[in-house]
Image (cartoon, rainbow, N blue to C red; front, side, top):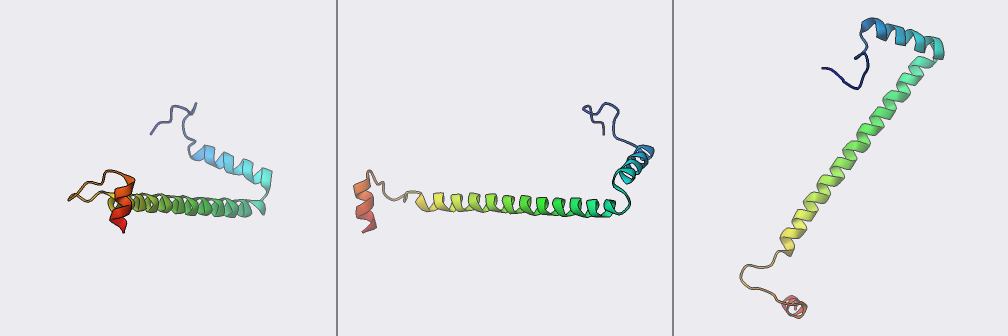
Length: 90
């Protein structure tokens, strides 16, 4: 899989080791696990929010479809104006 927006492609094994060593030098051995935990929690919260959003959207779509089905006029007769709707409700 190629990524045209990356100038040199994805980093390979030696590049990842070099990146890890630079991070180790910058943050120290004690901070790396804390950073990884924080990133993991952030990703977990993001995933949960994404799932909640998707659930909310699908529920809204279902409710809209149900509402349209309930509002559909009866096939046996046509209601012409608001007065006839009120009379039909009574």
